[in-house]
Length: 308
Image (cartoon, rainbow, N blue to C red):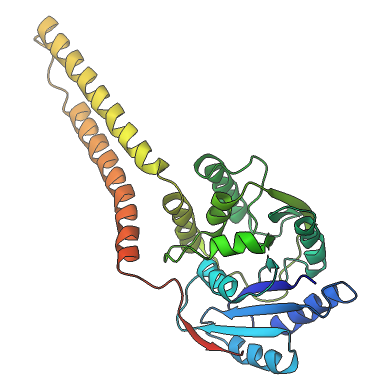
C-alpha cells in the first residue's frame, strides 16, 4: 500500500489550521489513503500561535506531524524542511490558507499513480491580486526561457510529486531554494489538472512585493546561468556601439570641423554605459553572493522542535 504525505508550510495561520486538517482528512476519507497518510505542518517561525495549534493537532490527530523552524526560512525552504521529513511514496505540497481545495488532492495524486512524476494545478478563477497575477505571468515567461519549462505549464505551489523526484530534490542543500527549478531539472514527466481557486479562509497573504522579487531572483540566478551570458552579450553590444559611435564622431569631425562638441550626447553615453555596467555587476554580485553563502554552509533551514 502506497503512503501519502501532505506538506504544508505554515505562517500566520493559527485560525486556519483546524479547518485545513479537517478538510484534508475529509477529502481522503473512504479512499485508499484514509488510514495511510500524514500531514506535515512546518511552522516557519510564525509570530502567532500557529505552533501551539500544531502541537494540539498532533496530540489529537496521529496523522499530523509538526515541525517548527528556529528562524523564518521562507516558503520554499520551509517546504524543503517538510520534504526532508515526509515519508510518503507520493508527496503533495499545498498552501496553508485553503485557497488550494483539499478536495483536489486525490485528483492530482491519481496522475502520479498513472505514471507521471509531477502533477501541477492550473487555477480557474484566480483570487490573487492583479499585481500578483502580472508577476506570475512574468515569472512564467522567464521560467519558460531560463528553465526550459514546458509552454502552458503553470508552476503553482499546489502539486503532487513522486517519491523518486522528492529524493532527488532534497539532495539540494543550498540556502537559496527554488523548488520548481529543482523539479524541472529532475524530470520531464510533468502534467497538470485544472482546479477551482478558492478565497482565503482568513487573514492576508504573507507575500509582499519584496518577497516576490526575492523569489524571482532565486529562480533567475539559482537555476540558470543565462543572466550571466546576457550580461556578457550586453557588454559586447555596448562595446560595438561605442566603437561605431567613435567612428561616426571622427568622420563628422573631419568632414565638418565647425560642429561644436555635443556635451549632452556625451553625458547620455556615459550614463548609459555606467548604468549597464552596474546592472551587469549586480547580476554577477547575485551569483557571487550565493556562492559565498553556499561555501560558508549557510543553513537551508534550522529545525527547533518536532512533535514526533
